[in-house]
Structure formats: structure tokens, C-alpha cells
Image (cartoon, rainbow, N blue to C red; front, top):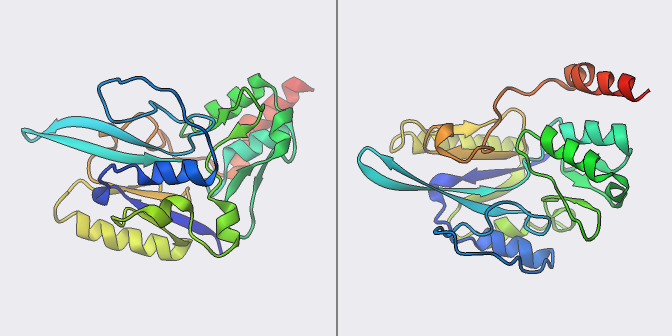
Length: 240
């Protein structure tokens, strides 16, 4: 059965415990940053920051609101990065059948910087990052080693507010809808982001445009067959 995250941003306090736990589990080094007038740090995902908490400040109904959003790869149900990766280097991007996790392998080193950029720009959430030191394409791996050992992802394990949840996809969808019903009593504009096409389901309390640019898709995803016909096949013909 595929796995899924449910991330309830209405419960997030931006403690960034999830961000730190991800760093520690993957044994990633620190990223030098500068004070930019916000607690969001670093400013975006990096090859060694698979998860960051976004801070968006808005004046809503005469009050200042902080909107927190723990960003990570969405592990798309039909990942366009895999389809594009297969065209360039088969096996560079795989999808684990048991969990649905989208994983970048050692073969991603064989991708050129230009091909990595193509994959990044094709991602609806602009997530993948190329590590200039190793040549690897990187992102959240669902803590696949922990999950395969029967443990929760590190970010979920460390979350003390109930923001981060993980389990069977059907269970997470049920929890998401139950939480949305409750959230709407206080936040009438609350919604779930892209629930049909991703395995990382977010509950947000405000309209999508209040969050950062890549919080949700701009358009509905194509089916895999339509995607191949519209994007992959023309590229293959040009390459041939």
C-alpha cells in the first residue's frame, strides 16, 4: 500500500524541528546563511536541505498573520521527474512500488547540469536540486530507510504538535478530510492542496496565493499517457 504524509499547517508553530531532524538523519552539513529579516532560513531548498519551513507574513482582517509551510518533495502519484529522467538516464529516478516514494539514485550523477535543470523546471513544485560537489540530483527521500525498517520519517517522528503525520495513503486522506472539516470552523477558507495527485497532502488555512509560489500546482496534472504524448514524445523526436 502506498504511503503518504499529511501536513496540517494549522498546527504548525514553525519550530523547525522537522527541518533539523531531516538534516540530522541524513547527516547533512550546515548551510551558511545571512539574516534576511525573517526566521526562514535558508531561503529555499538546497542539495542538503530537503525540508525547510516557509514563513509568509500577511495582514488579514486587520491582523498580522504568520503562515507556516514545511516544504518538501510531494512524492507525486505520477511523478513527471521520473518520466523525464527515464528519457535521459533510465534508473536515475525511480518510484518505490511498496511506498510510492520517488527516489533519486546514484545514476542521477550521469545527468548533465542542463538535464537536471530540465527536471527541476518540469517539477510542479520546483523541488529537485543538483549537488555541485557530488553531481547528484537531490530531494526528500521519504526517509525510505526508516520506513522500510517500520519507523516513521525523521520529520514526523520529531514533530510534537501533530502537524506532521505519516501512514497508509487512505488513512492519511481520511485524516486530512477530518482535519479539514474541523479547521473550517475557525478558518472558512481552509483547503487541501493537490490531494489527488500527491503523496504529501497539505492542509492550509488561507487561499493558496497567500503562500509561496510553489506551494501548489498552477494547473491540474496531466495523466501519465497525456504527459508522455505532450512532452516526452516531442522531445524524443527532436533528439532523434
